[in-house]
Each structure stands twice: as C-alpha cells, then as structure tokens.
Image (cartoon, rainbow, N blue to C red; front, side):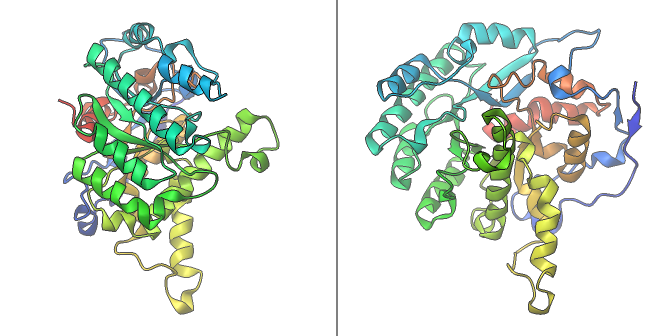
Length: 370
C-alpha cells in the first residue's frame, strides 16, 4: 500500500476580487489537511471497500445517453453511432446506478452529437427530439435524471430559440455545448453573447464536451481514433477555457457557470504557463492581455469533473481549485471509464464535508437541485 501525503502549506485561493466574480463565500483549502492516498488505483480500477457500495449518493454530471427516437432520426440522415445499451435503456441504467451508489446522471449527448453535419432544419429537429426524450426520462425518473439540454450551435439564434423553448421545463438544468465546431471557436463570436446572457439569467451552467471524431486528432496522435480522441478533447478544453478568460467573457458574465469535462483537460496543467507568458513574454510592453483579476483567480470560475484517471492528478486539481469546484463526472458509458464512481474518492482520506461536496453537494448547488 502506498501512503503518500500532501504537505501542509498555506495555499491562497479566493481573493477579494475573485469573490466579486461570484465565487462561493467559503473556500476550503484541502492542502491544509492531511490528505493521504490509500493506494495508487487508477480511476477505471477503483472498487468499493469492505463496506460495499452503500446507498445511491453521487451525482454524475458527465454521463451520456442517446434516446431511441434520436438514434432513429440520425439514421434517417445517414448517420449511426456506436453506443452502449444503457444509452437508451433507462431501466437498465437505473439498476446499474443503484448497484454502484449513483443517485443521478445529468444526461447529455456524447461526442457523436450532430452539430457538425446537421443542417439548420435537421439541427432544430434533432434538438427537439433529444430534449423531448429528456423530458420523458425525467418524468419517469424525476429523482434520477436531470437533463443537460441540447441545441444546435451553428446559428446562435437557433441556440437561443431552443434554449428559450425548454427553459423552465421540468428536469432541464443545464445547456450542453460542444467545445468547437470544425475548429471554429464559435463561442466567442459576438453573436453568441446573448446565449451566455440568457444562461446567466436562468442559472443554467454550460456543460462542455468535444464533438465529432476530433478536430485535431488526425495530427496529434499518429495512431487510431481512440488515441486521437484521448488527446483532442483535453486540448480543446484548454483552448476554450483560456479564451473564456482572455476574451473577458467571464468578466462580462460574472454569474455564468462553466463546467469543463475531463478535469478541465490541459487547462489546469498549462494555466500557469499561459499566465506567465501573458505577463512576461513581452515584458517591455506589459501584459499581452490586461485582465481584470489575476489569471490564477479565474481557475476557480470554472467547475471541473474529477476525471483525471490517475490519483496524483486528482490531488493536483484539488490543491489548485479546492473541493468546491470539483464534481463527479465519469464519461460513462463511452469508454467504460469509471465503474464505481464513489470508490474513486474512497481512495483518499478526505474530510466528510469535502467528500460530500464532490460527490453531490456541488452538483446540487450548480444544478439547483433540492
């Protein structure tokens, strides 16, 4: 058994300027506690201890589905997706969740979402099919399936139209968006700003995910698609997170909530480099982009799912942003990533308050769940 400990240190988070941007008023610094790693088990191999799974508890904000009406519709358009049976079998999924201590899945489409190829008419139709199926799933299992609604994004007017159509309907709790479309960072075009404004008004967090076979994976891995996807997704998360900061979007929409999947991708690891190069690369001319707050403070404007895969990566993320910004997110069932979501955290000697925040507390707050 490996017994690793994070040394006690004073790690400053939550500066006064950051608190003005809508951060939680209380910040937990877990590095001040003795957080010991019980073993070095990777996420996909984590298993329950002798106490067993326990009652359904956790809320997974990165859980994919593909309802049968949607599958039929994209087949009409000449597209198919490789899916797990539980993508459409909600009864089987609930049984799976019960056996693994999971209370809720925030349902969202996976990387096969159609927004790269669907026409305007197809996009609006497919969004309605998915969202209507989501309403039905929530009605049948109201305490198990909140919904991250889908919307076409090529035309921001269509995105806003669909958002307004489903806002306020039972179970709709977030807006699910792709990182980019065909390499285009559409999010930061001026025409998309009304979507951000409306989500801020509604209290809808933005739930991001990569889309398609990958914009960049043809040149990043030199291997099969699975390896390309492993690199492409975190790379895209890095780009949009950085642009949310340097574009001033987070300052313009101070209450907008953004959830980055795959533990933020490359962003937590490269943020310091971006910070340094922005402020020091052209030292004689000052910062390349003048920010309203220190760059490091913006890291806590995002939420991150906990999908680091290695325990050491989770410890780093936890120290960087604190337990208040981390959520359970498994990417289930795309790659069978995490079979026992709660057992992942059981590897760490976390204080109960911090464990509860990550397992369900942060998600309840973010999704406005009772």
